[in-house]
Length: 123
Image 1 (tube, one colour):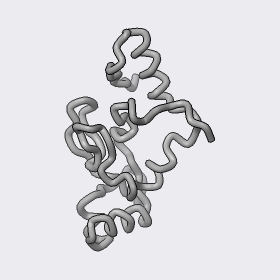
Image 2 (cartoon, rainbow, N blue to C red; image 1 turned 90 degrees about the horizontal axis):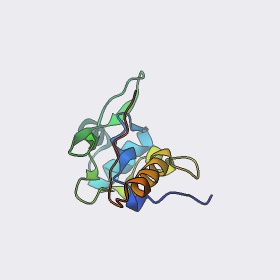
Image 3 (cartoon, one colour; image 1 turned 135 degrees about the horizontal axis):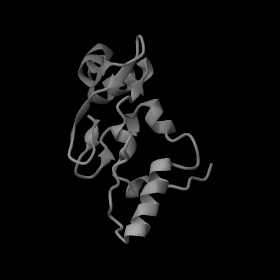
């Protein structure tokens, strides 16, 4: 599928979603990356989600969006575990278009500012 967005020009908006759900295979992959047990990876990198039994990646403070995935490099706005990232991150946005990228690109053109960061609001 040909995509119509450029993640390298985005400030990692998807990495700021409150619920970045992880599966046991994702935790195992992170454990292998850090050479720790899956139990330790689960304890260090995840928190309880909203759904029963759900695990989500922990967040850290982010000066742009408030909080972000603990694996986001806040300087480069890139994933520090890209090769071992969770399946949900690999499949995002699951379409040829990214709604945030479309909005960001539109606003950058409108504002004539190629580095503009738009903070989406939930109404």
